[in-house]
Image (cartoon, rainbow, N blue to C red; front, side, top):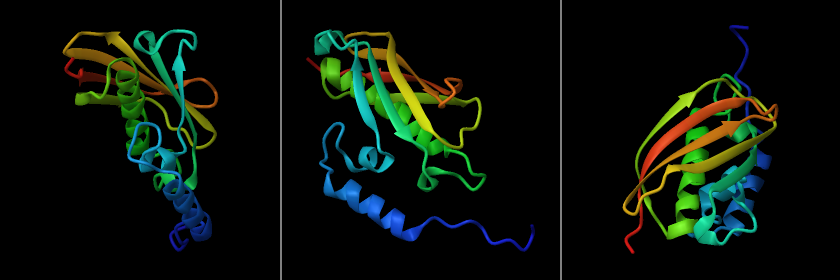
Length: 156
């Protein structure tokens, strides 16, 4: 084991992945490069509610070797980024672009493969400041990380 080389990412697959993310990106909500790099899919709930009344932004993405840490599990930074994005996109959908004031992430269990689901929600929505949470679950439906955050709401 001590003489084993670290596992390497498939370079051709990584280049193709980055090229695909670059090809379809725009510096806008849902299409910015990092969201495309992570492979995020966006859904706003409830589907039949007007945008101003949406209460959840659900993201899904696949764990790939490019977002794993050296132990082989999904990197905490990728998890935190996806959770921040879920909250920020919900703020944007209901009120316009906001800003993360602070965020705390609790990592509860590692995830190593499969489809991740991230759900951002308001816990208290205000005119100038809102409190939010985001939950990341693995393919087994078990909670892997929880983020709580304070958001600056856009000025009317």
